[in-house]
Length: 476
Image (cartoon, rainbow, N blue to C red; front, side, top):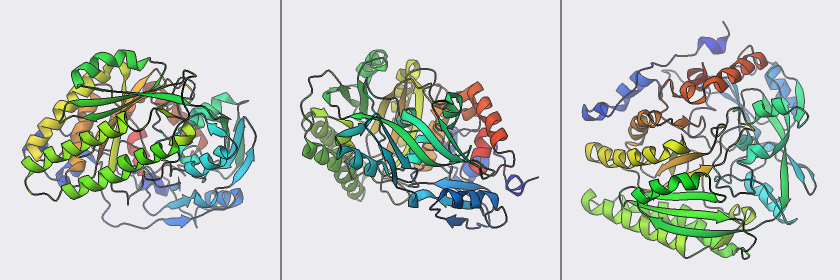
């Protein structure tokens, strides 16, 4: 048995329900039952390497004595799960491989460690833009195309940045450098959103276009009206983003339409919106948490949240573009970020029921435990994406529900119980964004596609050089 396999601790399949909160179980009991947040008694720090060339990546993968398994590539460390964590293995920090390789009017090739915001600036200087984006601008290009991403795409956009990939340079687990492009569509379909399990991505080629513009429309409605509109929103020829305040029964719907009539977007307005939504509001709510008495404090938090949404969704912006939106600088990611988030994806046909259950769960959980998310939740309509075998929208349009908070005490309990609820509505976990995943949910959500992916992974990496405990638990 390979040393990496010997360290694997299989998860317990039992799920935790709301009764665990009612009986007063703590995180230690939940961890023992689910295995989701288990900690090894003795933590061995991984070896951290910052490669600057393809040759150095190959050296790491070939030398198993100096660089023990598992080997996990890391970009901006934006993951909300343990998908890049290793115990006594090797971490490949790709941040030094961040150069522009090639650029023309239709394609850009960059090293995998380049940050999204840096690439956007390079393209904007030439009046070009990407055909998709990601909410977290500090993520690296290699990380974005190798995992799930969240994006409010218009009718002329690609479903996500991974779908824009035209080519990938990859070092396989046996140290071999290989290039894949549109002449090998089957391999590109496997490599997109493959979570670094097929090899270490070192270069990425993306489809680009001249800068375009869209019109932004807003509306404020209740949850009941929203559920009636969801079937139309699922197939709308517009980008769909929804801000949710479950304790106020409010939803702010944002539609982005490319109708050829959009005005030139105001960059200053987008910067102000970014600052209000991603800096001012989280900082303000963090301070309001210190107000004593939740009967007074929590309605105050809701009031500020709703007022902020009214401002940023009705007053500031009426036109935009991918290039302008991607200039925001206040979205922080990683373990030092003030905001915590967790995202589940739901089939469009089941999202209405899931949304209603989410609202009821928020109220019920608050009464039982006193915990509630203080930031508005976000929902995105994700376009169909058959370009990646592990895409959550492979079979049709879906809605992603992103829960957000600045409160850490009680957050993990909240997610574990919500994970059990999400599974009842066809919830699809994102392996880099979804915490508290029930033991069998990944297999149920991805079905035969997961079986095919795992079979190909075993062929590419028969000695389990790149798979860590997290993926072993969820993929098998």
